[in-house]
Length: 296
Ligand code: IPD
Image 1 (cartoon, rainbow, N blue to C red):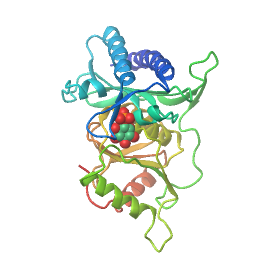
Image 2: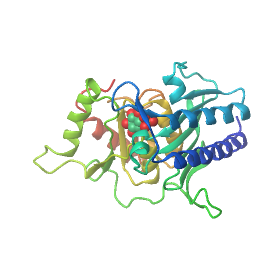
Image 3: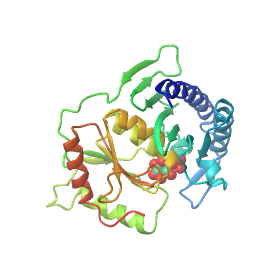
């Protein structure tokens, strides 16, 4: 598919994301939630309604493309990701934030071809921030996105002055929705290794938890976060952010030691901000050295 085609797809995804954002904002404060697999894995009627709207618009515009959405998947439509052009969609990433009114919920719309993320659009309607990326065409943050005077800036927003090192980093982390078992234990032990226990000095500068994988990827792409480590989320949480980050000079390694090229549906990732490649690789190796266990 040519760059022109991908740019056209990006503009369609942008329109759809802005429509989704309008619905999400209108429903804020009215969200009635249900549990999915457990009491911290939540869904609302708005997640489902927004996904239905997105699916309808994208299948009309691109009838030959496949669709993988969080709520359709939970509803039993769970074919594995194939090489075919596939929209990978989270109607509301950060559903818990949406329910609580914490303004870091977004719509995450990605396109993968040959299982590679090639277009990504992420829209946070509360901040009116739109992140976009197209393979080989760069990535951007557009503020005031839903107004008549949007402001577009290329990512990363700044070249961080500091060298990328584990000791000087702030790292995005999430508990996710698995609060027992292997991944929970691996995360707890690794968080402890990364945050302290080394002569009381602490290892990294700190953690941040935005409550949305797509928002965490966007923050790494912008350069606000140095890295984001996750185990347990899904392709629809990361596909759009993946393109945006890579086009911003970032790097996605595996969430477990030794995995340099994780597939987009591998469910465990270490996303690293823009920096010289040697620094990124040294950071990844150092981070992996602190992982206590192995994510599933
Ligand atoms: C969740 C968020 C969260 C991540 C979870 C995801 P949802 O997505 O991205 O940050 O840790 O694994 O399930 O449920 O809000 O769409």
